[in-house]
Picture (cartoon, rainbow, N blue to C red):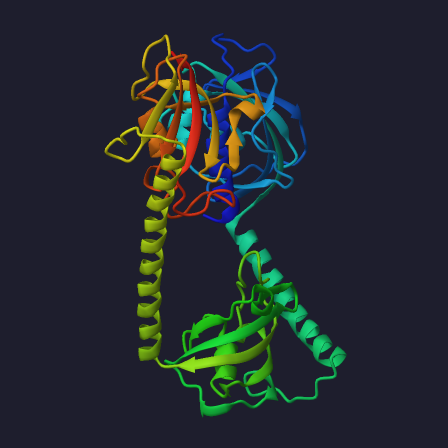
Length: 445
């Protein structure tokens, strides 16, 4: 199943999640009922083309999704979806619908949300969807192609891209006045700086600065801009076999330019989003360091020890920061077993929330230094979540079982029940204890 097929299946899931219209009528004025499949449809455009999809064909279709109340929902696609024709998942499903259309036809179909979601998507219907709800699917059948036709088109495209590669490569060589003769693999290896020491061998590791650009695309590596050299195990071919051949002749401190045809780089597939298929690649390579597998192992072990030490230091600093904050604010409240410090600021007059209940709350969050990082109060929009379901940080799940409706509190959370070793975005660093001013507005029933 290719990417566009996966996108189509994903789209079905999105559609089902947003279907909210409900229609319990047994008839649909203006629509024709296909008795064989219990399917309601309306053909808008009749065409002379008689081609219809058969099992194994791929259909190119535009789709628009509307509620029975005529509200468009779901993502819009600028290009037709590629949908493989398969056996129906139930009588009257989307595949039975598409079988009715010829190339150029446009139509509207009506589907039951429950059948669509459970049987076609293969997932339980969400509770907020009524089992009788329906929605419209507007379809334009742009084209239908057989597997053989698609394979032929792919082969033709590959031939064109291969021919274009030769033109692009020759133009680059000519426009850059390159007089270097390529080797037997078609590689242009142009030395810039010799370097010193032993020649690099397979199995060793290198730190290298690399700039790499696809001649039919864009620059996809620039370690100078990132200010971080790549560490590469020589012989793995991760940057193409042409790259491997070039660095095997280099020494520490050496520098060269490599121009590689696609068959020695990323080949007929390329790298999606970075390197087009059949693209020659130009590399600028500078060797910063060369080391053995044993030395690499020692480096990794040292880095792990340093990382653990850094974590330990951050944890110790976190506890010191919490103690200092409590002391400065004269807070003597005993923390819970998790480390949560709960300070009631206004007693509530309603019930306590329990795990599984949905609540509406206001909050303002601060770092210990007083920097505000988020506030529903400032936005004027309360936040809703279900207690005890892991939808929020652990400290919140615990704290909101301690406050009753109408109550306000200050809660202080160590990082182990907040955002932990990862932090959150650019506002909350790793191992940051947090302070929240919270208010339980309502238990939603």
